[in-house]
Length: 391
Image (cartoon, rainbow, N blue to C red; front, side, top):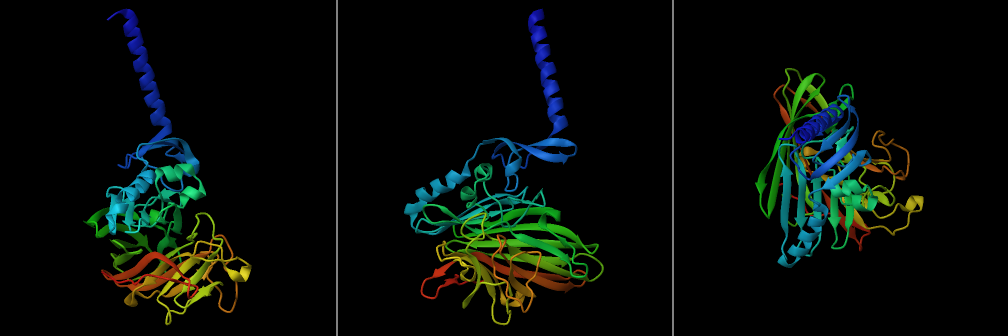
C-alpha cells in the first residue's frame, strides 16, 4: 500500500472514530426492536445527551423530530389492506405486537369495507414511553406529520371507507393510594412482559404484566385485552394483586378526554348514557346505569349545532366490577360538584371511572370493562352501543 493510500485510510479511521465518539457522547441510542425507520430526536438532556437515535416514533414526540426516515409506512399499508380485503366480505382481525417493548395495534376489518383500529402502548405518558395494553398512540408517519387530520388515525380510530375518525385518545389511567391520593400513571410502572395469547382471524388476545409500589407496598398488575372480529369494542381485564405484607387501600382511574370525531378538539362532544345525553358535568347514578360514553353530537346548552360526526364511544363495566364513581367533567383533575350545573364546554371534556378497593396481603381484585365505539340512533337522538359480553 502506498504512503498516500495509508494516509487516506488512516484519515478515514480517525474521522470514523471521532464521529462515533461524538455520536456516543451526545446521542442516546434507543432500539426497541420495531425497526419502523430511523429517527433522530431532540431530548431534554437524558444522561447528559441532547439527542436520541431510535427505531420507532410514538405520539408525544412529534415536536422533538430533527429528521426521520420511515421504512414501513403502515398508515398506507392499512389502507391498502382494507382495499385488498374488501372483496373477502367477512369480518376479520389483524394484530401487530412487539412483546419485548409491549406495544402494537389490532385492526378489526368489517365486511362492509370499514375498520376499527386500536393502537396500544404507542404514546408518551409524563414524557416517558408506555409499555403494555394501554390505548393510545399511532404510526410513525402519523406522528411525523403532526397534523390533526392525520392524528385522527391514533388511539382507537374508525375508518368509514374514505377517512379516519377519532374515537379514543391516549387513555388517562393510574393506580394510587386511597389514603394519600398519590397516583402512578402507567409510565411509572415496571414493565414485566407481554405477549399474544391467541391470534386468529376471529379472536386476538394480548396480555401484559406490570409492577408498581403504592404506599410502600408492591403491587402486581396483570392486563388482558380480548378482541373479536366484527365487534366494535374490546374487553379489558385488569387484575391487581397485593404483593406486600400489609393491607393495601388503593384507587384506580380509567378515563379519557377522547376528542370524539376529530383529534385535537372537544367541540361537539357531550356525555351520554342509555336513555339521555349528558350536557353538564355530572356524577352518574350507578344504580341506574352500567356504562357511560362521549358522543360527537354538539352540546345544545352552549349553542353547538348538530353538525358533527354522530360518532360516539363508551366504557361499560360488568356487573360484579361496578366502580365507585362514574362521571363527566371539563377537567380530569376536578370532580363534578353536586348541586351545580356546569356545561361540558372545555377542550378537555372528560369521562372517567374510579374504583376503590382494600386488598389484604396476597389478595387480588379484578376490573372488567368494555372499551368501544357506538353510533347515533337517528330515531332516538341517542347513541346506541353494541351488545357486549364477557368471553
